[in-house]
Image (cartoon, rainbow, N blue to C red; front, side, top):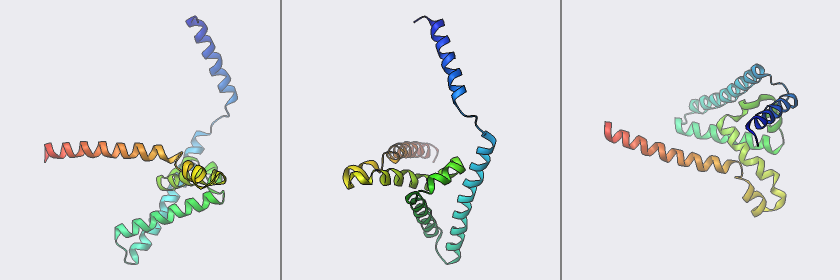
Length: 154
């Protein structure tokens, strides 16, 4: 195909996409994401302070907060509320621990009817699996670099 025809075809396609795409309210989306993400983090901090005031160590308090936030995200996902909250709040609900819990629970709930092995077990990590794999690879790579730099400097 001639390069001028290809360019014209791409331009036309781009114009079609612009017409078909709804306008984005970028500023309000960012504000909602910031406020909702901050709200989730504030809840986590309030819980952490509560557990610290009850005599828990910092590690124990962090563990309790993580478990509560994960359980809350999974329950909200199970009742079909996390998606509705996510539509309103946008990226704010993807605060790592709650977003990750939702990404594991959603496919598990959706494919549960296909059985425990091929439904729940196989589909549970459909979204979260790549995050786990690449997160593990990245952490190993960073650990190796940290070790090498520590050996040279230290």
